[in-house]
Length: 100
Picture 1 (cartoon, helix red, strand yellow):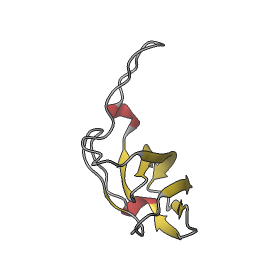
Picture 2 (cartoon, rainbow, N blue to C red; picture 1 turned 60 degrees about the vertical axis):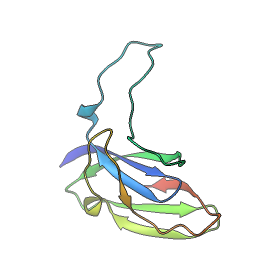
Picture 3 (cartoon, helix red, strand yellow; picture 1 turned 180 degrees about the vertical axis):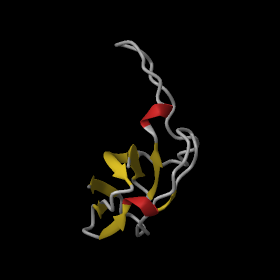
Picture 4 (cartoon, rainbow, N blue to C red; picture 1 turned 135 degrees about the vertical axis):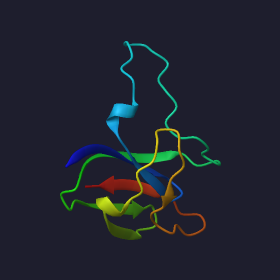
């Protein structure tokens, strides 16, 4: 069992990232890059998850499409690495929510 951040872009791509990859910064800092190449997409939602405990995540789009996925099936990537397709989003639709 390990902590992770499930990050999902509005175009349906996502990844799991270990919180250890994020350095601690002082208040008012500039932050750190968390996705290598967004290709015009934006981060839709981030959820705290536990890997190895059969958690599931529900991903919902603005047009009402939804998919339930196993968290352990999502690719673990580096903080700046790309993600994998978690939901096939229709033209003109976007991911709006992720619930664990």
